[in-house]
Image 1 (tube, one colour):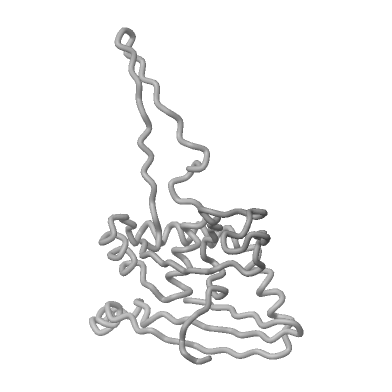
Image 2: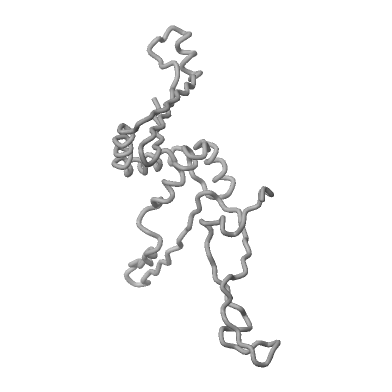
Length: 201
């Protein structure tokens, strides 16, 4: 305990693959004793393998096209059903939002990482996808605010960030420019759970 290593049970999000024995199966005679039979052991052997991939992956479908040599009509293969209808599915938008707001990875930094791995993802696209994803969960967000308002105890913290470009405008006499942006974190302690909310302005 305390050695910093994770057991196989800690990889809850990993893909699970069952590997059958290449030589024996349940009910076979034991190769070492004449009367024994093999049966499934309650605990399988476990090996963990990890690979490096881009945070967001892409699949390029090459749709075969066939053309009639007489009428010139072109027939294009349909997109497979598992590909879905949209270029970016729900999981892509959710991952962009999690990387940005959950792990603190800026959009421009993720853009450079994706580009270096051969799967380009512009920062502007990330913002659009994160906003579309957030629009879909506003009902849940509003309900969290309602439940948080019923809490028994509140903690809050304001973090101010100065915008240097606007400070230069203010120094030049433009008092209408904002001096900075802020993020307010609110932790509401309810009877059964805690709710963390963040507001940015």
